[in-house]
Length: 277
Length: 274
Ligand SMILES: Nc1ncnc2c1ncn2[C@@H]1O[C@H](COP(=O)(O)OP(=O)(O)O)[C@@H](O)[C@H]1O
Ligand SMILES: [Mg+2]
View (cartoon, each protein chain N blue to C red):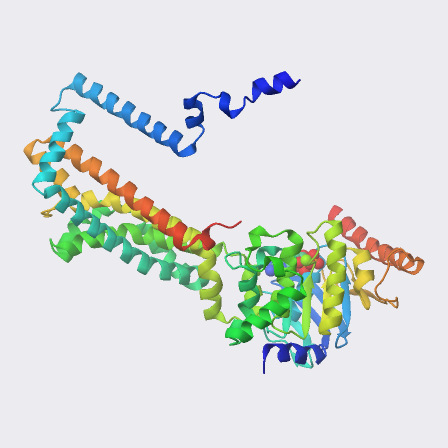
């Protein structure tokens, strides 16, 4: 199968479902997350928001397979995390991860070489590899910077590299942990549109952690809010039935923003109160 | 206003020739280097006049001794012998220290197992092993190379561990979810990311090797800069000692330069980012 055929093939394949069944996660004696149950449909875009430190990254790590014995972090996961109906037992190329920090890139590799990381491990070589990499670099709009090193790129461009690197493995699920958190407002807004477009083109399942309410409303099919930790859980789940591409200045969006804001503020206040004690 | 600007930044043509030359970076650094050398020589000459040439040989005495040792070939032989011992011992230190450091850095269990020994031996100077080295490895090359190896291997190991521990866990996670197993993670992530610290360790080890070579050649070396320095003492030839010391310094400077240039040429992408 040629690279471009592979691309097309993955384009027509749907994303995988993700299911958390009564999931609790503890670090030594600390209960980070408790009793989370959530089913994410194949190809769905779910945004996760909540007070900082509540366990959003932890939940994402559980889905990525970073926790427990096969992962590199000490967290013990109880309950079941299922992707495409199968239990997560460690990281896998079908589940791509985009991190907030560009420290996740390999600074000694050019953009092209960063993107080639996954495909090379999969054994793709030569012209096929070149086509595949060119395709994904163009997809994120970095053709002009393909031979630069990450240190020579802006923050927004670095996040594009992270996206291309993950997409080049043609994952069924992309887990994003505040991927735009370090960017300025302008770049952020452009990147939100890009992510929406990439999602529509690849039809991956997306789990997107953010602390920006407008971002969540703009991108999510559903927005999930979490309660403050310790033993954080899911507080509410909102269906966002707005036309895409969305406009955050419509009255419906503003109404949603208000609801979400009150929801999260309540939990943030809880955190503050417990800290004061 | 315009007048002032003109006065502060005169056109290039208005500058005197020496001002223009002085603006050229390589010219400036060469001139400063020459000046530094000249001041050093003058101070050296003055000390030697004050305390006498036997006690403190003058630059010209040392120059004569240098020509003497260079002409009978003993300086070249000594330099080559010492350089070879240093390179072999240091090279072995890298070949052994880097893999040990990588494994120790990656596996906490191995780190805890070996740590007491690393922490112990790194405070025991190589000179305290000179006698044992000769008893165990004989009076030949082996004992000298072993001492250089000893002085290199710990610093290389410790630097490599530091490099591995400093690798951002995000890189390891990213690699894992892109399909890298433990072996690929080691070769494609941990090693490349640790290269700056490994290079630092290698340079420090090179410095240590030069500090150690003189004690390594204290006994039973026919040739070598250390041997030259020790033997000159027996003949009361302080100017030979000076020649040995200066050659050692220049050789060390040269080796460090070679490492730096090699790193810049061959490992640039691993070292210059951030
Ligand atoms: N490796 C770890 N060891 C111990 N505690 C951890 C670890 N990772 C996260 N935690 C704790 O779990 C809680 C949730 O963290 P996290 O998921 O990073 O929150 P956030 O919602 O801001 O992403 C925090 O209290 C954090 O201190
Ligand atoms: Mg987080």
